[in-house]
Amino acid sequence: MARSTQVLLYLLSAAIAARCMKMELDESLNSKDNISWPQNDSRRAHVRRNRDISTTEMKEKMCNSTECMISANRIINSMDSSVDPCEDFFQFACGGFIKDSSVNHWHQRKILELDSINVLVLERLLKLLVGDSKKYPFLQKAREKYRNCTTIIHPHFCLKGAKKSDAWLLGVAYAREYPETADEFRRLWIIVDTVYLEFRDMVAKSTWMDEESIKRSIIKAAKLDIALGYDPYILKKHRFRFKILNMLNPLLSAPVHWPEYAIIFLPLTQMNPPIYKLGHEVLEYGAMGAIFAHELTHSYTMFDYDGDGKKNFIWSPNTISAFYERVGCFVAQYNEEFRNFIEIRKDEIERINSTRNVFENIADSSGLRAAFRTFKWKENTIWTLKGLEDFSPEQLFFLAHANLHCTKEMPHVTEETILKNKRTPFRFRVNVPMKNMDEFAKAWHCPLGSNMNPVKKCVIW
Image 1 (cartoon, one colour):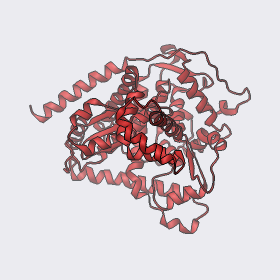
Image 2: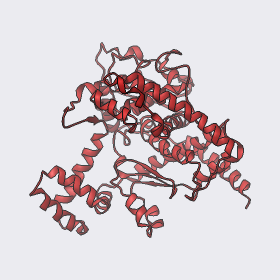
Image 3: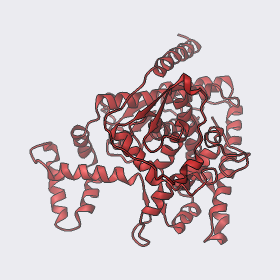
């Protein structure tokens, strides 16, 4: 079959799948917990409904599930209503979290909302190591090492050591002891599949890529293996490639993309709040959807790898040149953001260079845009959360995304991260991608020229 015919059939099947997915809805209306705003809360001053479809054409539902209540409570408690979201959305969404979190200057450099996942995982691993010795006999040596370790140093360090040294065995036991339900996996695959289709359409409509580069990119993405949690199919497929098996450990603390193996892996540990199991589809697209789209962006921007994981340029020279023009926009944008932030070490400001992390920054921006556009065409019910009734679905999407990245760290730590050109601090990973989105400015009614709606925006897809 000719390659052009394959591409046509792929696009046709993808379009049919997308239309079917648009018809799916999930409802979670179980508990009767209640969370409400303080009556004099000024958050309402920043809230404006702004929907593309009139409310008479859509049904409005209140999500009363336990997951929704927990998510709403976390978002509300994390916010700082005194901040204008059009000036500093990170501070607006995370100011409460920052205020309520304590960072020890000497022993703790920063604290993250995501730390809650690490705490949950370590608690579960501890139960596996000190629990029923007859269960999971393959953990016998790991349990012995842990017990011996605790006689020498603090159990916390022993637990973290076990997670690293016996990662695969503990990962297998973790996956069996705390499996995801069929419904949880079904909903996750819907998020992954719909975001994948939307990103493909964004690339297909690109005005700076030539037709052949677009086709090759779509074919490459179609060959990706996407592994979620503890995926028997992927494990069986790569059972003789031990390096991959080690990389596909369920206990990994972050999603990864391996271009040389054409795999995107979302670990089992990531399938917890504030990333997943949020009760509300809009929130999950803002969190998990954006995370998956971030990794998917890497697959598209790594034009020097083909769909088989081989070093092979799939873009034309003209497309590559146009791409790097847009990359330059991101480098300049983040350099300016960092310079404006530095206060303590102004004499070192010339060291700032965001080139090292530019592809991560691009993935943040393109991933957020893809997740937002997916939620917009898939969502046909207006879901509300108790205590957040005045926030539109679009606003809830951005709040969920920011909440995921809430961080408190000492200012000198943030500056050190910037000056050493380490990974972009979360403050900028929230604000800058949103600054690049007209959809964000529209959702929050930010005037053109305000801090969160600059005139110049950087966009790849």
